[in-house]
Image (cartoon, rainbow, N blue to C red; front, side):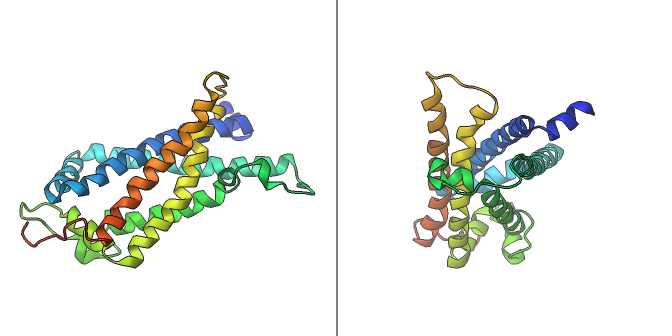
Length: 231
C-alpha cells in the first residue's frame, strides 16, 4: 500500500498516527479510571461493573484486540518517529538546551516504554491473574468474580500500591504532553483556542493521576473497607 509506506516514511504521517492512536488510548485510560473509582461505592457496585463487562462476551474481546492493536500502532509510530527525527539530524546537536522543550516532551519515548512495562504487569495482576492467582479466583456472595476483594487485598500490600503510584508519574507526563500536542499533530492551529489546547494535557493528566493514585492511597489508609467473606 503506497499510502501506508508514505505515512511510515513521513514525520507528519507518524505524528498524525500517534495523535489519533493516542486519543483513543487517552479516552480508554479516562474511562478505565472512572470504572475503577467505583471501588469507593462498595463491593456490589464494582463487581456489578466488572460483571457487566464480562457479559459483553465476544464484544469485549473485539474491544481488547482493538485496544491492543491501537497500543501497538502507537508504540511503533513513536519508535518510527524517533528514528525519522534522528535521521533528519544524524550528527545531533553540539549543545543541548533542555529549557527550550518541556521535560514531558523530551521523555515521551522512555516514559512510554515504562508505561508499557506497567501495563503488562497490570494485565498480569488484575486481568490474567498471574501475579496473585489465589486472589484472582475469589468470588462474592452472588458467585461473581470478586474484583473488589482482589483490588483491596492487592493494594493493601505497600510494594504493589507504591509501584502503581510510581507508574502513574510517567503516565501523567506522557498524557500531559501527548494530549496537548494532539491538536498540533493534526495541524489544528487557531490562535484564539491555542491556550485552551495547551491546557488540555496538564488538566486531563492531573485528573487521571489524582483519580488513579487515590485508590491505592485510600486503601492503604484504610478508607476503603476490607472485603468481608460472603459480602
